Amino acid sequence: MPSDTPTTDILAAVDLGSNSFHMIVARLDNGQLKTIDRIKEPVRLGEGLNENKHLTDKVAKRALDCLSRFSQRIGDLGHESVRAVGTNTLRRIDDGGEFLRLAEQTLGHSIDIIAGREEARLVYLGVAHGLAVSDQKRLVIDIGGGSTEMILGQQMHPYQMDSLFMGCVGISQQFFGDGKITRKSMDAAVLACRLEIHPVAAAYHQRNWQEAVGSSGTIRAVRDVLQAEDDSDTSISKKALKRLNKAVVDAGSIDNLDFPGLTESRKPVFAGGVAVLSAVFKALGIERMRVSDLALKEGLAYELLGNIQHHDIREQTVNSLVDRYSLDSKQGDLVASTAISLLNQVVVQWDLDDPESQLLLAWAARLCEIGLAISHSGYHKHGAYILANGDLQGFSRRQQMILATLVQSHRNKFLKDGEVELSKSDLLLCQRLGIILRLSVLMHRGHSHTGKPDPTISVHKKEVNLSFPDNWLHEHPLTLAELAAESKILANAGYQLNYY
Image 1 (cartoon, rainbow, N blue to C red):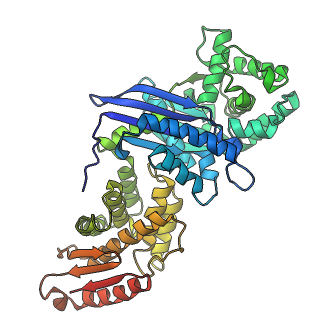
Image 2: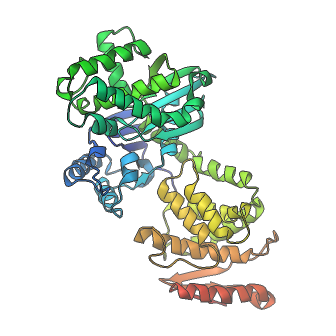
Image 3: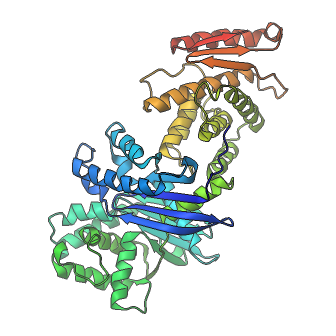
């Protein structure tokens, strides 16, 4: 298998948000990251989502033009050195994956669509790297274009995370879409945000933390406007935010938001951002908030660095699931070992040289019995549900779906075209990894931890050939019978299994 170690000391993190697209490029220097380039463009992706959950042509072009410029900066970097993620608006687009395909083609790198809580975790990771070491419990707030992330954490570890459906773009469109700002519309916007916060407000109230920290463009924009008024204060106080709220209303319209420190690109969504932040202060009892210049993109960069240094958070997540659901770790390790042995023999013929393929296969092998915690009947389906819908730290939505699909298809009925919501390439990947996983599980069906020979495997398109030591199958009639049954199942999906 190819190494997952970068061939360069340059790393890049790309955050495709609902308001702005961000990219940082950093150099790995003695195990630390030093930012050497930082690019931000106000794409306002969220305002282009129509009622059919498709992007308008105008906004789609604006986004792709931005990604084309990003590509010029990182086009020479290998996939192992770049992590790009999409957040709220990209989560909501429902166009059969067409825009995502165009975006990945334009950027030249894959784009992971991450869930809200995963976004929150990465935000906290980025913010925490910019704070002094402390045992204080911290509240971190990140107001994006389409969502607001709320996190409680201590040192480098978040322990409470929520993503709320309110952001500066969405609130600006809903309450100030005509360009006018009135006291009535501002109060209505703040009330709507407080209603969104209400179900989780108790967990994040001031009594549960000692320090509040804000990140994101909205909060930095508020800080910049307030600091232009009083350059001695680099934080946001409750009193100053209330004064700013009044000043925004007094301006009367978006066009009249002419505050020192406020950029032209931020004006269209500033009133919505102030409404969200005002609601957060009121709902959580915040008196003062520090402002961090680090956020999601920095969290991505530090996590990428951790993966390179073999501290993959996904491995920790899988270990946690094994413990939580009391899985037979020896069984999982045996199945994973056989699966990787088989994969290594077909890596070229089946185009499985992406290091991620090996990781997903090994994790699926260790987790394929997770559904037994619910019921033995149909446990592969229960396991798939857990993996598809759980908050799996470090995993993108696509990775979770592949993992869930592998677990669901590791026994009984096998995958056919059109039966799962996967792209054509991901379906083919799941079929190939799924066959390897099924054969590996078959070899260890009896949960015996004694050694069994790993068969020799060769493939050609949809033909799979298994070879065992002389007389081994004859001496193991149960395995022979299971292979016969497996051959029929795979034949129904268009694959031919030969064994001898």
